[in-house]
Image (cartoon, rainbow, N blue to C red; front, side, top):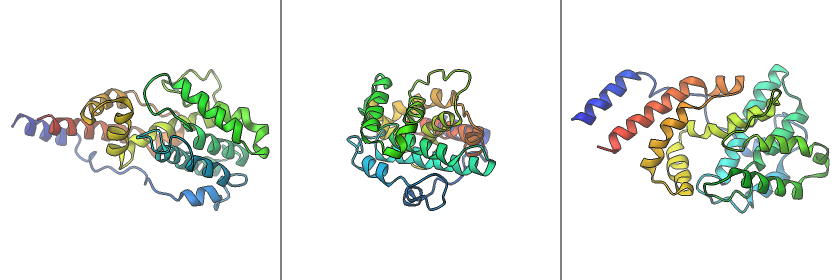
Length: 239
């Protein structure tokens, strides 16, 4: 009975939030790779082929799905900022390459994330296309921005660095978050889904979006909704 009362109180407190809808988590990776909308220079097939063959594609969280999710989220940010004149097509290409490669060859377990950044950068250096070599250091700087816990980017972080940070944490707000976060990421950390749920409250409470895109596309409403859902799940599952 106590848990039923708690559930009712949560439903009352967050009325309307449980059913909230953020922007749709939909899109075509083929459209992005082929650059059908002309948002950036060239296409991304070379890099997408490499990611589909990456050593870490089967990891519970830091695998193929996550790398493609971050690509998609960054692509949606490119759509947003191109319309505002805030990003060039060359900058967009750099961002999307970084998004694809930011977790390439991830070790798939907890620990020092700097190790994973080094591995991703090494793979990019090996496979970078000739036309992208002049921009390699810019792409690397974007990848480095994803190291977690986040490091200080200084007084003048690039828009692309901030976009990729927002994209990298956004998967928790998607409809498949229970599988990808609680089960997938949990398997990498050696934690049960219940333990991951308990951990999410603290994580979500500290989430901060760094770009206008992140605040508009996800924002505080998504954070509040996910915290409410997490609390409700904990109440029901720990009865």
